[in-house]
Length: 115
Length: 112
Image 1 (cartoon, rainbow over the protein chains, first blue to last red):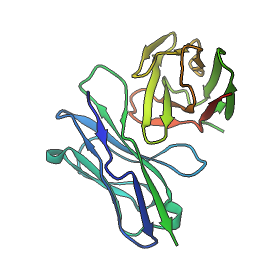
Image 2: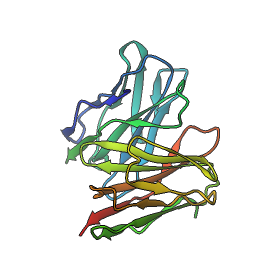
Image 3: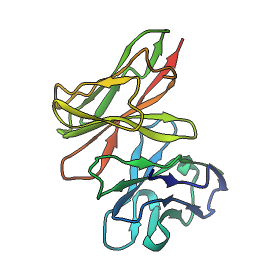
């Protein structure tokens, strides 16, 4: 079965530290890739997405992600985190060649940022 | 105010009881989805519907049922056959030709 792996389950950082959250998926064909964020008490919202083109995509709040096809990866990065980035982050993949309309989510990474 | 409204925010189920979670959207989106979120397991797809009067099972449909009689509404029933219903349930919708899902605030279901 196709899967999405987020290896970092819980990350703790101090403000101004750099962030990189890993995301790998197990499918060799064409995919759409997403990062969603769930702030405490808020609904899940889209952080950024990759459909095609430039593999380095920029999202909201200074986040960016790089699609590396050869590594089946779509890692999320931010040069300098803030306390307000404390949230749970989910990577998701949609396999375009499958005749199904579904996103496959990773298990999530909980990020805690301390002042 | 456009968006996806899930109700109630909290729901308690007694043993052997069916409960229905509401999801309404006024975004004119065609597709709607139900996910279950458990700690450490991410989101898992229960059911989805791409058009009115049609829906498909997701990865964990057993013990759940849905209907899609109106474009705006996609209620989820958690039946007594679902033996472990305690979870956070998220509804999402997507506009045709746009591959982005938008999520509601969720319903937290607990068993008494």
